[in-house]
Image (cartoon, rainbow, N blue to C red; front, top):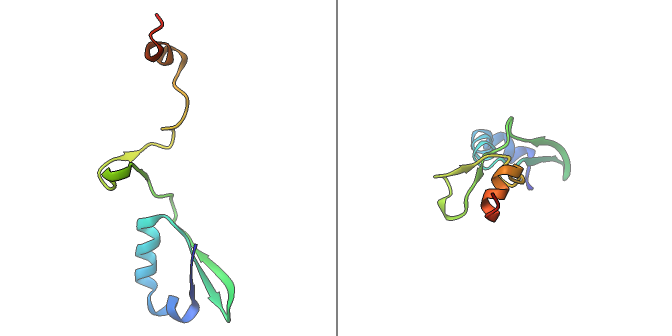
Length: 78
């Protein structure tokens, strides 16, 4: 997680907001060297697919097991 001090956060707030929105990664804001707040996205960033980054977004259930009927078809079972 990226960390910035409160002075930098104040000076670059719009850039930090854009970064958090586009990457989906939160940013910790410190005050006097100690974490004071976390700037995080409202919604998670969509998952992207390897070299096609920005072109294809994967659904959250992409890694879920296939339904039994679909799995049978992939395995060559009637």
